[in-house]
Amino acid sequence: MVYTNSGWRPRLVALDIDGTLMGGDGTVPDAVRAAVAGVVAAGVPVVLSTGRGWTGTKPLADLLDLPPGQHVSSNGAVRVSYPPLELLERVTFDPADVVDRVLAEHPEAMVAIEVIGEGFKVNRPFPEGELTGELVQVELGELVAEPVTRVVVRDPNASEDDFLRLAHRLGLQGVSYFIGYTAWLDIAPEGVDKSYGLAGVCRDLGVDPADVLALGDGRNDIEMLRWAGRGVALGEAPEVVRAAADHVTGPFLDGGTAEELRRWF
Image (tube, rainbow, N blue to C red):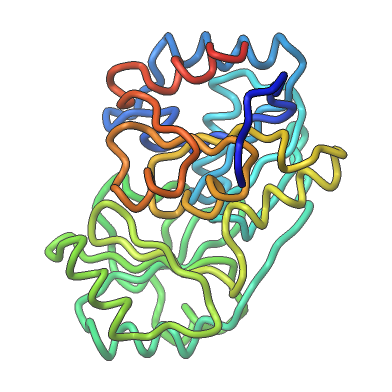
């Protein structure tokens, strides 16, 4: 969406978490917390919009002391109101075919299925700290037995390029998928991404997407940045993400998130 600065001001702020609010060390810089507090003080809704499951999203809503409002997790497949927690939307798909194809192409892959509000079922242990909530290792049949909101595929011994090639070989149809900075593949229901979840928030709140400010740094932010009235990429985002944005702010470690929020609040 084309952004113009003719008296424009955000009526809703959508924020990715990892690399946008939180650094690789797992902390939120004081400047970012202060900038988010400035948005809240202005009475503008702050919506967390993340690939994380809800169990990994809730701690950030608490840490930032966000008032009751809606949030988008699982790359748009889950939309909640919090606090108190109310599940507003849950979009699912049958994971059996996708998981079978992934493991046929990449037998050593780790696969996780999200269990909303609890954690994940996994086919084998993931690296410590990469998934949040309770992790339960199960057989493949149980892993794909029911419709799910999200499938995570991971291989710490592979590269980002390996997984880009894997997704290309799979030719994934009938689902949405997102490649992370590392060998990480998120698979979601078809047509579901962060912009899908945020559109639901906007409908409920009566906010035009043209009045949304969105910030992100990953490939799973591309649709959100294109959809929002002002989509802003962090400076260290991959070129394909920066190309999708209306503006590129400074790198996260140089205060890019706070810089963009202070521009308006």
